[in-house]
Each structure stands twice: as C-alpha cells, then as structure tokens.
Length: 467
Image (tube, rainbow, N blue to C red; front, side, top):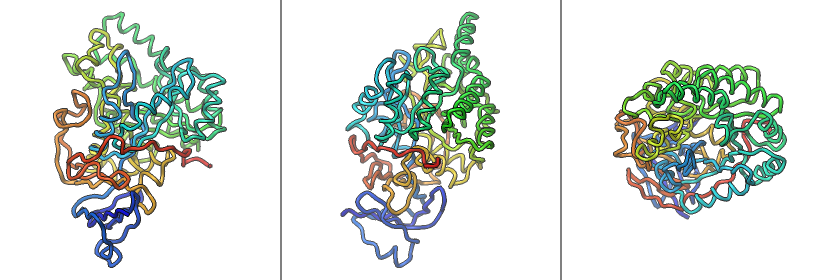
C-alpha cells in the first residue's frame, strides 16, 4: 500500500475551506484531518508534501475539449498525448472529449475511433461525449446502448450546415430519446442556416478579414437558437446543456428557463470571459488566432457572463480547447474568414485564469472550484470520484501556489500550438504539483507523468436530475 500525506495546506472544495492534512492511500483520498491535531500527526507515509502557504484543490475537470478533431480540412494540433500533458500542467486531471459520428455511419464506429486515438496516450483520466451528426432510427437505438456503457451525453449542432448540423426534427427526436434513457443533450446553439446567409453576403461585399467572423455570427442568432433549443427540450421533457455560451442575450434565455424551473444548464469558457472582438480585429490577420464559434463578443457581454456564473444561471467553465496553429492552419482562411479553422487553445490556462478571476473579485474561491471541478463532475456523472477532496474520491489533487506570478506565453506553455490566446497576460497563481489517482504527474513544476497513466472513465448520468 502506497501512502502520501499532504500537510499544512488550505484545502478548498466547492463547499468548504479548511486547513487540513490529506492522507492518500492506493490512489484514493483516505482521510482528512485538521492540521496539527493528533489524528493528522499520527499518519505515516512513503511521501510527505509540505503544502504550507499553498492551496490544496481537486484536480480540474474540463468537460469540453477537442483533441485531434478533424475540422475544415485539417486537425486540431493537440493529440491526446500532448493535450492531456498540457492539461495536467494547468491543474486539470480529467477531460471529457468528443467522439464524432460520421454522417451515415454508426455511433459505435465513431466512439471506437476516438477510443483508439486516446488509448495508451493520456497523462490524465478521460471520458467521451458523443457528437451525433446523423439522427435516424438506428442512431436513436444506439443512444440507449451508449448510456448503459457510460457515454451519457450527446452533442448536437444547430450550426455548421453540411457538417454537424441537425434540424429541429432531428434534435427533437434525440431529446425525446434522452428523456427516456437519462442522457443529456449538449447543444451548440447558433442558427447556422441564417449565419450561412450572412457569411455569403459578407464575402460578396469583400468583407474577408477575421473580424467579420464575429460580425456574421450575431449574438441574436445565438440567443434565438438557445431559446429554440430550450423549447424543444421542454416539448421533449428532456434536460439541456448549452455549450460555450458567449452572449448577454443567450444568458438571459437560460436564466428565464431556469426561473421557470426547467432542467436547463449553461457553460461558458475563459475566452468569452477574458477576450473580446478587439482580439478578432487585430491587424495583419492576427485576429485569425481568435476565431472560434460561438465567436468572441464585444467586451460589454463579459459582465453578464460573470454575473451568470455568480447567480448559477451558468454552472460550468470549460475550455472548448480546439487548437489550430497560426502557421499553416489558421492561415487557410487568408482572404476568406469562413475558411479559418474554428477553435482556440486553452486547456492549460483555465484554472489559472479563474484563480485570477477570484483575485479580481468576480468569483469566490469555492465558486472557482465549483465551476471548474465539482459541477462539471456532477453534470457528467463523475462525482464524487472526481471533482472533490473527500474520503473515497480519486486522489486527483493539485497543490496550487496562490502567490506565484506568471506571464502566459506560447514560449512557455505546453500545448502543441504556436501561439497563446493570452500572450503576455500576467496572472497570479500557478500549479506547483499535480497528482492523478495518487501518482505524481507534475512534481514541483516538473512533468513526472507518463502517457498511458490516464484511463478511460465511464460516467453515470447527470447528477442534477431526478434519477
């Protein structure tokens, strides 16, 4: 039996803050005891970590990543190996990625393909959502089977006609099925049919620069699609999780639905909290680095997102990590913004940016852990195995230095991408040591993990719903 003791830190979970020592045995949290008490001082261990002056927090759960995603004729630049290593550097110990169904192909085929990509490669634990690109009678039957196997969430797109798009009838059928099988539909809520019209018109006017990506993907078309998804879910009697919410008007739709008592949930991402259309408008095609969908919004939308996180109208902060290198990938869209691969790198930055948000007064420390660790674990059926520090939980633990200062930069990050969306940004707070199931992945700012340590983790259904 291997035993590790973490002594003298401030343990922060979604519900508590306490100066406690943590005992880890065979990959799990065995006990917590107030620092300095006889119970704590009696523990013996193979390894003792001095966390004095540090936070001891649960490993982050990033419920929205896209490693190796095919998009726009290229692939996301992080593999499961590089992406999970970078996640660990940023204090995230579990990701939930997206397996993709090919149109006309079984869901199982897509899931098998993503399992093959990830198997033996990951430095941290992982699970999968399933992107449903083609709703038909066979697909609907497969949804039931996947839920039984621990793939309990399914993503649909109201955007990207001809690629991932589902029409309202397909969405309704999938929602009806999820109402019966306990699955959770995750929705990319943008009116893709209307957006395509605006893209065509913008290009015809010669408006080709990256900033027009944000102008054609209007906030009202995010809000309209969010409203429509909510009402379709209501008709189906199904829960709904709206991904990467970016606009004031979309937050208002979620808030209204939740005030009505509907089982509707919302996620936002650091890029919407910290970046804006100012970045999309950077000259010399630099704005292409910031092309993602939903797009970055004018800065005034950020206040509504922060407020939504405080009031619990938004419950989760994930990254939608989907990196494409500027050189050779983002450049595919020179002269036509619609050909810029959509996505930003961020899996390594989320925990630090949210800690900065604590210092800036946007969130409390416990809310930081709630939106980044506990709630995503509960939302997607991983709690209390993941997302907390409590007896019986996996020993996914981060020793976090709340006073260390850093400057975010592509020169120092570990993501496999040639730029940082937060280049030059100064933040206070940094990961020092990371354990995944009790094994050291980052030890005093050195990577000591390995590809293949991370294991596939089946999930139960959403823990916010009546079971």
